[in-house]
Image (tube, rainbow, N blue to C red; front, side, top):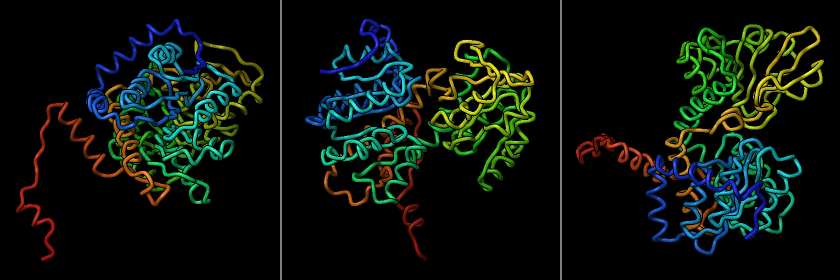
Length: 414
């Protein structure tokens, strides 16, 4: 076993965190019980790059319970929790990650899990898939396929596939209904504000909150901001999503206009330079900026550093940049994911569904080895439905079923 973590002595704290989420993730517990019996991943190596906190750790342990040899790293330098990483190593998993890694360390860690010659890749943002294609192409033949968790990662995979560069099948977990309708909307909505509120200790009610992007994640962030008493402004590039925001009761305007009146700014786009110099120049003194998209390029922190006359740590995880005219712009978590770099990520009950889809999709890849024609695969509807049925059962909820007569009526062409 090989690992590279900060401190193995932290494992007991991490173990408590993992046990807590396990107690609140009944779907994964049920899958774990099945995998212990069937061992569907026996003889297979799984490389996983997902935000390394307790819920992800439990996902790794379920894979291991199913016979997989796990090689684990984080997908963001500021979201790795060192005690959780230590707990996984204590339990015999291979982990390469630590909090606040440098760019060189992060690259070394993700390279380590690829060098293990994985058969399955579980990715968040596409870094592992990109790395094996660009730096370790000789290992591609070992890969049966994998799963991608995020919208940003799917964009990268689609671009690779359209260019004819994607060499093994990837299941688009993010596009499953039981993922994006709940994880992206309710999970992001709650966890983003958890991160902002615990970090800033400022009131939201009565403030102007600017949400950049009105996809499922943006919808969740805007909905929760409204619930906290904010006046919500949405910026968009998609006319249809802009109309949705208007009809949901929010103001819609260009970022350069929203920048003049916003108090909190949250980017949720997956694109770069969403908040840039033009916006910084007109922002009010003391605004709070953060990112809930994916990479640390949505808030152009590099630009902010150049135009600021000075900067200082205003509060733990908040950097304050003072401009030439004295206005202060605060950025949470260096512009990295606010819900993970400044919080614990999505609630356990939400990730219970998303990670159940990951596990069942990985199993689908194994069962259909050599039979998948496309490199781009949507989550099969039966997996989506199975996760929903199980979740409802754990909630103690029953739903109606169509009778035969109703099915015949729905299928009738008369």
